[in-house]
Length: 571
Image 1 (cartoon, rainbow, N blue to C red):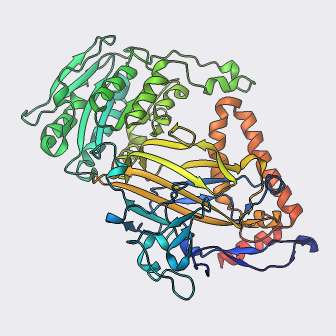
Image 2 (cartoon, rainbow, N blue to C red):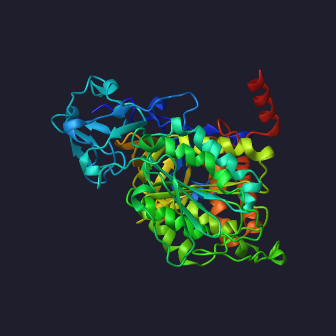
Image 3 (cartoon, rainbow, N blue to C red):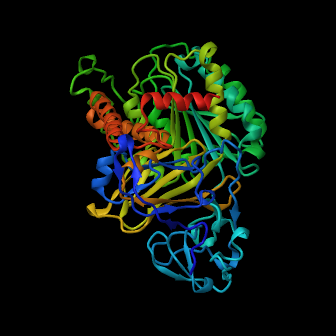
């Protein structure tokens, strides 16, 4: 049957003149409908054309990877089309479980379709059938977003749920030590939280709770029947318990007044914390918050000003200036070996709890260990050294407002599928890897970005004319709907190294290298990572100059050519 316009189509191409008159033999070029590709705001590969062999990839020096930001705010405000398959059921390949997309090939007048990931044939269900027109298109193609758009959102049926969709949950864990009060951090934080209450997602289902801590853990009953919240202090960190489990996490709509009263009173209640030498028990406070929300999951927002030296997860000052610049410097970036920063944090992720960590240190606080709270739960780390409310207060407020109001995917998992001959060989970002290729992300928000590394399977060549990447994020939105966001793009396979260089995406390459470097720095150190990044850039420029590539990537362009292009763009 004739191919669909969205599907890759071969076009004959002859020799191509390279830089300096070098003749480059090219394979048949594969054309792809650009309007059917996933927008780069959500999925952005480092390459435009995929090398057909590992040797060709090494020759071009272009790293193979993809930057994925599945819930990104589109710069042009583009909306993602929503699909409800209803009684038809989600249309997927029966072999590889890939989702229907614009690049599948239709056969037998629409009665069968060939998966563009695994190349297996699938029967078209009677309720989903549509005949093909004279050009090989489905007659209803433009009426079905999944057949003409590279990014779609599918309403998931019941079989995609293992429990009822969770309500948005926010538990705030606030440091109320002397440093937190005197720097103005506590006042700024509670003011920003209060300002966002009208815009928290998920109303009227949203649930909230607050815990404060210094050398003890403070719980607050937020029962809607109370005019003022009740405070309970638990100083026995070894036998931590919840004094009133039923009132520590409440529906915001029901307890709005008492919750606001608590926010207003926190700076005053803890204003007498005038002792500078009080230690803090961060780990115990985090465990207490986890016990409050474990039955639902959600987001835990933790605010901390200094090194935690009491209770669970206590740390010691292991800063060693003598190691800086040495071959052992990377040991300072490795987290301590403690069950709290290992198994305990892993269990939080499994129970759909993500931690967003705000640090305000004025001295060493072992960020290398504390960052595990955010990294292994799909959270985020914010760092404000030597915080001052007058200088940094506006930035803190903006970060808190953004964190609480941006689009968020709850209890999410993500998987990237690739065509036969290509595999995902590396994962970079904040998540936990479940199985070989499933990313568990309790909270995936609009700013969450992941870098995935690709490679050829077993040093084999890719025999197909194109390579397809399809990412799928299964999640619950703030309104309680289970959804699947599907991102699909396809790329021609080439045997010309010059084409790989000329179609490469510089911004995606830079983002991918930075993601990879941030993972490597813990194991090999800053100096080695700097050398790797430098070698990446040098090898790419050397390969592109040798191959004489040009075009969108501009890698092969001489400095004068690049200057002229920049001038033309400026005009």
